[in-house]
Length: 99
Image (spheres, one colour):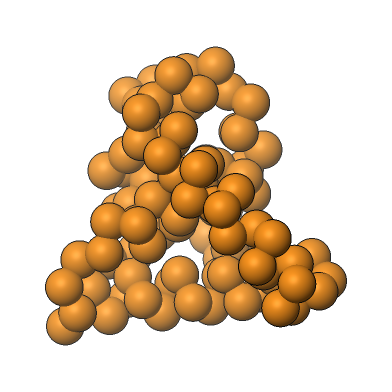
């Protein structure tokens, strides 16, 4: 098993929020973890756009990479969400298989 990667977990956290249309949620925006996650995501967004082009290709790459790396650490997206989400948003916001 790989050792935990905090940046990867934060990117996964942001990706979940983005897909659930929660990036403008006031409770989430106050979260330090969310702010760090957004900074990481924004720093990589330009690279993804240049390397992969279409939004769909970026989404697919991010999904496969994030889920694969998390699985290698024995984690799921739901675990990452539960770890970082504010108490009011602890319930996983996406239906199964939507990422």
